[in-house]
Length: 170
Image 1 (spheres, one colour):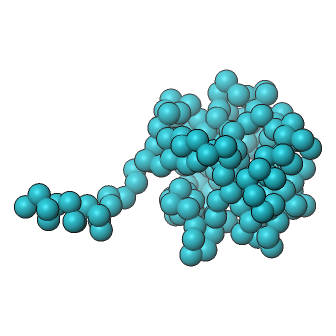
Image 2: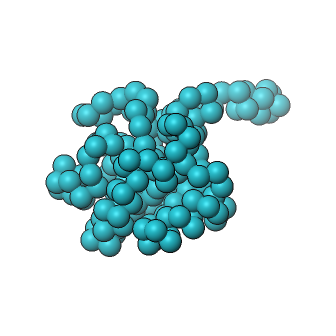
C-alpha cells in the first residue's frame, strides 16, 4: 500500500493553494521558498534587459527603497518575448546592478510563458483576480501577492512600478 501511495504522489501533485507552495532560485543560485515571506506582500515582475520597458528597473528600485518594509520585490528575468533577455545569469546580474543599481531580489533566468513555463508563473497566470487572467503579454507584467500568499492584483507592462494603482496597495 505504501508503494502505491508513493507512486500516486509522483504523478498526482495536489494543486497549489498559494504562492507559498513555490520556490525559486536566485540569480546567484540560492533556493528560496516563497513561504519565507509569509505575512508580507510580494510583487513579482517578469523582467528583461533589452526591452522598451527596461527603464522600469529604475522605478522598481525606487519602489524597493520606498516600500521595502511593506513588500518583497522579486524580478524574474525572462527571454520569452523576442529574446530580449541576456543569455546568462551573470550577464543579467551585471547589467541590472551596473546600469540600474538593482538591490531587490532577482531570480535566475526563467520562462514565464509557453511549454517550458515555470510552475510559479503557470500558477500566477491561471489565478482569478479582479484584473485579468491568462498568458503574460510582454515583459514587466506585475503580480501583487497579499500577506496570505494570494494573487490580488495583476498589472500589464505599461503600468509603471510607482503608479498609484500599485503603490496604494502596498
